[in-house]
Length: 77
Image 1 (tube, rainbow, N blue to C red):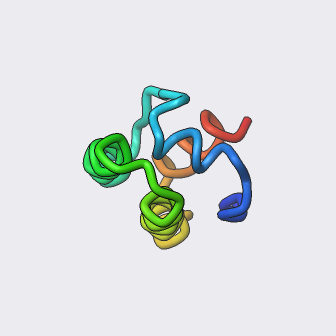
Image 2: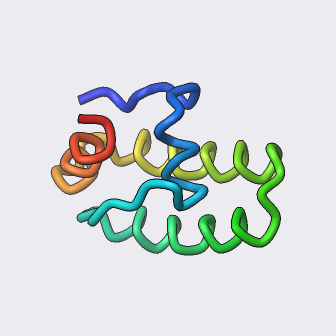
């Protein structure tokens, strides 16, 4: 399964907390908790872009993981 591009607006929705999902991939859950707090404290375009980069990278690196694949399906349909 391929990871949707960073330009997909759902990435920004996730890291800003506008959309919340029950995720399975533990590493992403931990990272997401941190980046949502960071972006909430300072929702600059740079912080959102950095958070998207981090979340995208963890899913791209672990794209073969069943739990990561399930999360991608949950977030992007």
